[in-house]
Length: 111
Image (tube, rainbow, N blue to C red; front, side, top):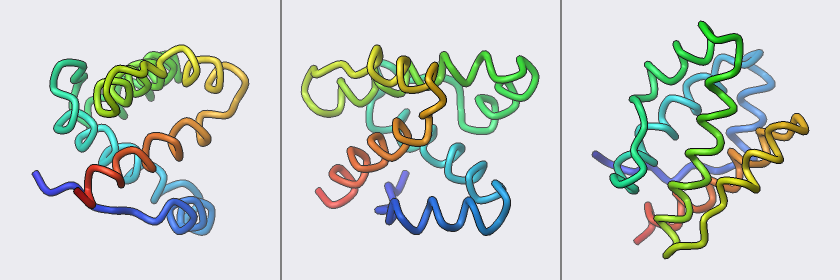
């Protein structure tokens, strides 16, 4: 799987301009790419994760953010960020966690 380097500011702007449609695409791609980069903490595919988030009215999304933090820990050598990402999500700042995760994915895309 090819890991794409995404500009975080452009992703946020596109998510706003497209009224969240690009945000869905970004969520799905980030899930798939983080699963490829951190196979020990892999979760469901991006499409399934999005569907589960819809069906559970966002509850799975909170779990997804926590697991995303775990994946970032695996990718950067053991500095697990699951709890930090979970706290950000509980305070309505999931976008910050996504941006932090995308920054880490970008590091591996350039490598």
